[in-house]
Image (cartoon, rainbow, N blue to C red; front, side, top):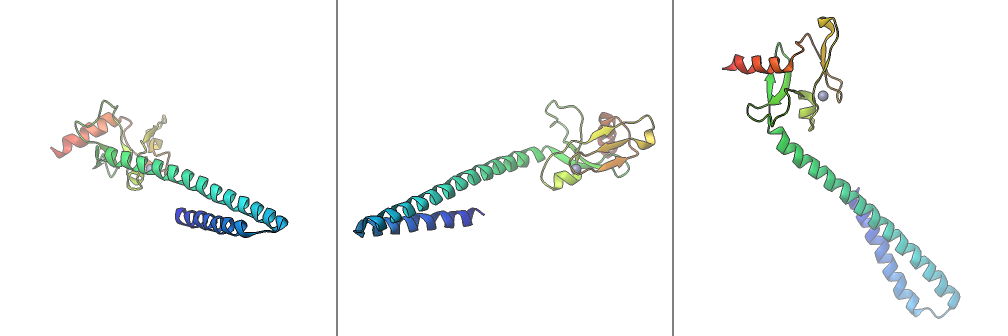
Length: 158
Ligand SMILES: [Zn+2]
């Protein structure tokens, strides 16, 4: 996408440059005016290509900044089986950064972003789920207290 826009923009600039050289040698006023209009069109095309490139570069820079943030953030987490095959990423001990007890979706972690699991609580414990709003994962038959799940998970390994 960026390469194609760059090539198109460079092509328009090259054509405009060639046209400008031709205009210099034109004696006929009508032909010269037509060539000037054509030149203005080529310059406009080049400017549009440049604007598209600048916009795309900004988007890519934002994507890169997001990926760098995620690369740093993901190191705070570790994959754990919280209970009965409830796999999720939880903050490593000492890396909670003052945040409340939480777990992030293992699917979304693998896909490169953080999605906190939310409790979908009902009166009937059998229908209770921990849900990921991003990938729509639902983890059933779990306790409703994330702090307790994390505490027991950590205790079971020591
Ligand atoms: Zn998810």
